[in-house]
Length: 438
Ligand SMILES: NC(=O)c1ccc[n+]([C@@H]2O[C@H](COP(=O)([O-])OP(=O)(O)OC[C@H]3O[C@@H](n4cnc5c(N)ncnc54)[C@H](O)[C@@H]3O)[C@@H](O)[C@H]2O)c1
Image 1 (tube, rainbow, N blue to C red):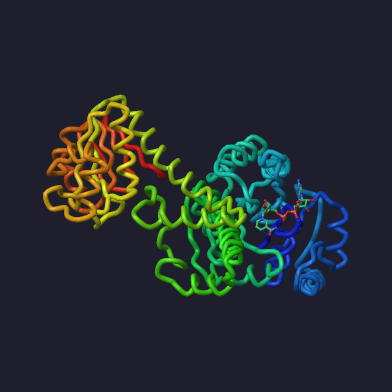
Image 2: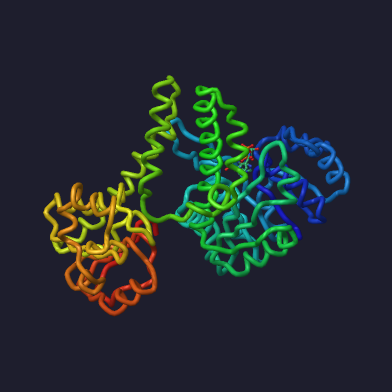
């Protein structure tokens, strides 16, 4: 394939060398004349294992050209990757001026081109960038319509500096966000052979996924380091601790606990987090991330309460009360916090939880209801149907087939559903639905 690459920094220079190695004819475009000269003479502008040899080989093969002539690069290729920088401003905002400028010049070049061309953004950008900045800029400058007259896609880049050529050949996943089937097929022809899943999704999901992945990596490193400082303070080697953490592939290194949904609670996580951060305080170990976790969990509970308050009705039905499905444990259940806050605000509440049957409860849970939350005990009803009949707003804190069936049969146009677990049932026309993370 004939491919142009805009921006020959770290991402662009590696992609250029690897695509040319794989047999494509690649035209590199950059505004920096020194970078162009370096590549012309067979040298890579970046320092990276294997990149100098590879650049020398592909330049010598004649499959790599470089230029600052955007019109020629677009005219002579069928696919363009854009990997210009998106540096951070002092307030965390992204500088989009490089993307805007390069898209203006690509759009002007597309105006003069008859054949179909596909533009793929590879720079890391905030969700909405492709649709709100790139698409209108290209359409205005070209006079053409994206996804009809030219292909447009966002494909996050997962190269890591230091291992970029290896990462190029073994990416964790290929993700293409696009509305253009043709653009997806062009990218499948280039990357479909790689030993990983090739996923075509919406543009927004692809844009957000890249941020989520980088944030996840940063959070993992910080977690290991905070545990490391805490462990050291109590004379424990955190390397051994974290090695054991990684051996648990059921709960730790697994999809467990990585589904957006409701806040955590129960008798262990909040208590043990408090104990751990207190341990840090008493030993002068600062752990801002672990220390912020309970505050973040409270913010999540607040989001559910805010959604209920949007309902402009006092009659609320709650499905679910215990801290997770399949248990009657109410200690530190986030749904108990929601109920208490709504009662405090004067809401007329009814609650059903199949596991929390007051007549059946024994031991610690019965005592907990009677002593700590008797006001909630009084609001419990015997069936999910009663909750749906009572509420104009239904807070769904528990999923499952039975709940789905009752919702499917009982929801009316008057209802607002606040869903914190991800049920499939939707009310009839006129009803409203608010998912907590979706
Ligand atoms: N560096 C990484 O490891 C990495 C990994 C994945 C994604 N990303 C993302 O990819 C993007 C690029 O990162 P990078 O590290 O390669 O950036 P970089 O700053 O090293 O390179 C950007 C290049 O774009 C060129 N450029 C600027 N305006 C141009 C224009 N109008 N036309 C042509 N070229 C132009 C610059 O001269 C520069 O050579 C960023 O959004 C980054 O977040 C980077």
